[in-house]
Image (cartoon, rainbow, N blue to C red; front, top):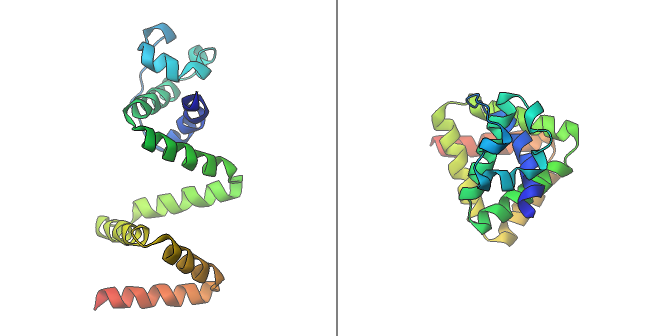
Length: 152
């Protein structure tokens, strides 16, 4: 019942997105969705339309995932749950700042992230440790240098 461990917090995380409001009774849900949303059976009548919509979308998305995607989602969720409130607020803040960036800048960041992810694990770890060892001033200078190189 891995889906049960993931769907509750995943539903809460989906609160970051605007969804259309609609409401169904528990018995009107498709059997597959009911199976995934079983932890919410008792609370379902008391959930507002937006909460129900978020949970239904989460169940639909979960159904469409491969086992590997479900495993990754579970791992990410566990990591999210391990964060304290201050850390979660910082993540939400960074996400909002990212969403406010121009599309071109978002694409550039995504490309840089993909390039980083394509590096061998030992190289990524070495870069992470080097970055973490830097002071905020050093990080700022390093980021500026990288931007200048990209601009040339």
